View 1 (cartoon, rainbow, N blue to C red):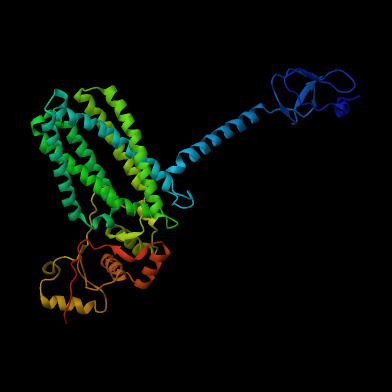
View 2 (tube, rainbow, N blue to C red; view 1 turned 180 degrees about the vertical axis):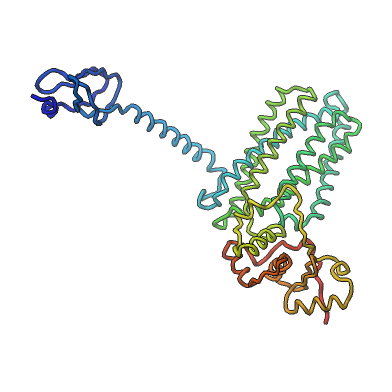
Length: 430
């Protein structure tokens, strides 16, 4: 009988944990194979017999498949366990459908900011305690008095800062969030340096505390705008609450790591400064990455200019996502357009002002060279169209109504804006 015919009588084998030969009903074994702790599935293989290929029982080792499934199950089950037991308390209800797609990327980097910030805080606190004299047995009352004075002066400085900045937090939250973190790092560095100048403890510690209050106010004031950009189901309150929980969790981890790092570093000043430099660099980098995922849909001067220039060039309005990749929040933004300048700078004479007013009659703005002046009562559409017109150096034809409609279709809010840094509009009485 031919081998191919004898194959019909071959027994399909599933072997578990013992030796088994693959033997046809009549004749000698084609092959003998040792099977140890192995489970098999059916699959075609070929064995060489008498210089010819013979198709035999369909067998394949399933160990590899089984181990892959086990590894996948283990990974998924671990992730599910962490989510149900830990992450669910740190993420908004309905995640991920209830938030923007960039939310998790932002949270990961922002959490690193919290950790690094707390680690630096542990190092600076150790330096402050040493500088105030507790390390050398100073009188507790004097140390306490110094501590209270520096806290009071720091809080006063924070109040003054908040009154000066005001609505700029809403206009550019990304910039002020980054500046606030930079102020925190600078303040922490000052605290670390205080042991070098123990007699200047109050002025140095007060200056550092002012910087920390500035940082805290910047973070608090910009948090609402940043959190709002991630909401998708009117869940700002929930998202804000979870943001606070994330900050607490990150701070706890950072404090623990800071204590461990402090014990390893020791009191050597150069080691402390070097370690802080590494921590501060990681802190700024993490914040830079985190803020980069924030997409704001309200136009300020920088975002409006980016959108307007692209529209004049291509006729297309960029989306908030596209603009977020181009806007700068680290270096100050430099614009060639001066908005609402003093009247004497806008025009040199009353007659020239009347000519400009006549030219832009019926509009909520006037333009003279690179000076853009808004008239009292101008709407948000007037503001956006005025900036667009002032950037139109080539005098390209366009429709203001089309521009506003495309802004809305691209996801921009046109019911309010933050284009004007100074509310210094002109009002005509006649």
